[in-house]
Image (cartoon, rainbow, N blue to C red; front, side, top):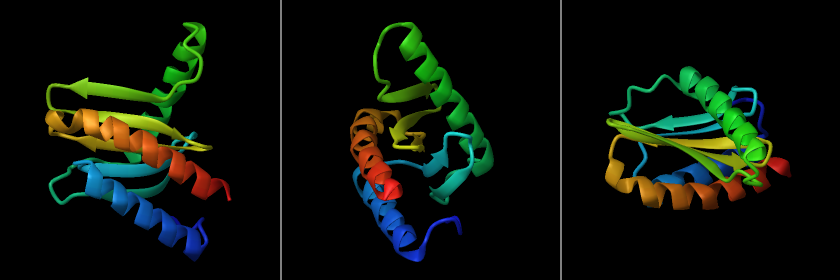
Length: 129
């Protein structure tokens, strides 16, 4: 976790992210600033994800998604989903931050998107206090 959070918020954020892992089969979860700086990161032992690379790529993808949504007249962007042969990444707005979740198991993608949307709102509310 980052030292930028007070201990109470840090504990609440950890509890939220742990709750997300209970409902969605994700290999890695991160809370990232829109500038690509990670605030929190958790990964399973099986995950070989580079947290700094994931944070930077996540911010770039979300900003590109925001721009595309505006240019295409789609209104507010909810999330960006990147799906490949070996897994997927879901990026959701969390207020001034973003919530990133990734997994190798493609069968869990639908549930992950739904849960990420719910938890992103909660993370955004917590971090805006």
